[in-house]
Image (cartoon, rainbow over all chains, first blue to last red; front, side):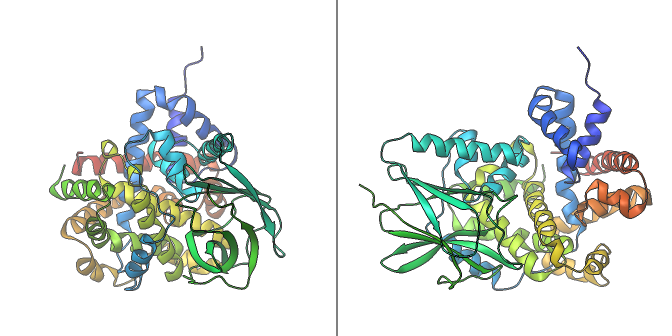
Length: 245
Length: 190
């Protein structure tokens, strides 16, 4: 058995925590983080130390007061329906279910066990597939409404009040824009979750809410950073929701 | 563990229980540090605002992402902000002027004045320790760390920008991280 080259591993871990790896280095780091590091006390300790440094380095930036409107905006979003709060469930379940956008779950993973974003995405997709196998789950195709290319599918499972939305080969929005999901009821729509953009053409969203009041969903293209209260006319995808039994 | 770290832990525990007041207290304690970091990385007010907005919402929606066994809350949260800021920079890079980012790698004059105003007392102390730790690095090591951390550059990009082999970037990065770790560990045993 070949003993691991810990100097090389530490070099990769240092680059990893600074988000500086690409290509083969990034792939090697992902492999190490999933296969070697968890079982190697030396590497775990190195990773933990480097992560701590990376967190502290944030203090090297001069502090700056955020705009006064930011906190009120956050407060408003805390009231939105697509908020899920669970405690005491297993890490795997949490990682696959707490985030609206799987990129967020990926980050949670990376700060915890350093599992790659791709693995987090796979976790959410597996959960979605599992939901599809349950009675009462309703796969719905989102109809492309405009120039945006790519397919988005929605799967909801009324009993567990989850909705997964995923797509591939999804075109990016126009520069300076992002996609926004809306939940509709009798023609009135509320924004659900954060705006999102495809990552490498992929979109994986998970939402948790009571779907019964809603009869449709829309995805529109909005100016990034805006906080629209109604959908713009830039409708990209839409679907009817099957009412919960 | 310092007193402020204990307070952060307690606030985080309350946030995990859905306590909005605790959430707002964490916002009060960390929004300036988070916004300053996001601004330094992204170089744009609007992008920095998005980063901080998203980070705080992520904290509210997934508080269990922070594991107290892994260290102070502040390192978790600033890492969260940093990840999002770098992701944002890389996504938005094509829309940005390169010159703005290069200029943004250098601290702006007069910014230390704001520090006392917007930071809590403990963060002021810790910030000073971080600056001092960075000052101990040889300039070539400090440069690669700052380009990666605040510029969002990959190691390949740093090598190209500095005209040095990627292997040298890796070596300098590792040496710098070891030195920073030793310097900061001395000051803050968890």
